[in-house]
Length: 103
Image (cartoon, rainbow, N blue to C red; front, side):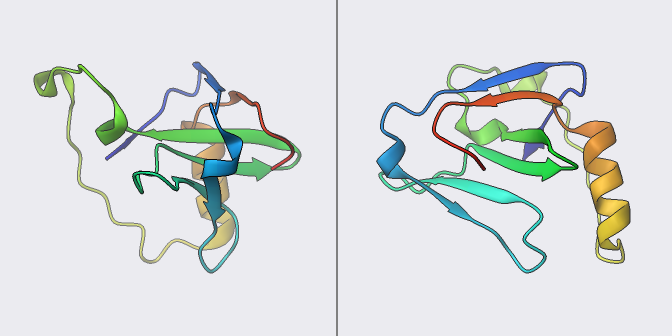
């Protein structure tokens, strides 16, 4: 489950950047940041036209009441890359800082 707020801000601080690996699927448009210790993917980022966008994994939050989470089913199977990037630009967090180097 992923969440974002396009008007929000996200500061990503890795305590040990050596334990964070990045994985990108087929189109290479998004980087999944994986914790080498536990295997959780807490954040996905995408560099779109020089601007960093992100979405966060709700399952990686501590102390969140599950009743506060609104579930929504989606299907993006027929979405092309241009439409996907436009959707991310509209919906993902647009004020993102990452502490361990260029993405």
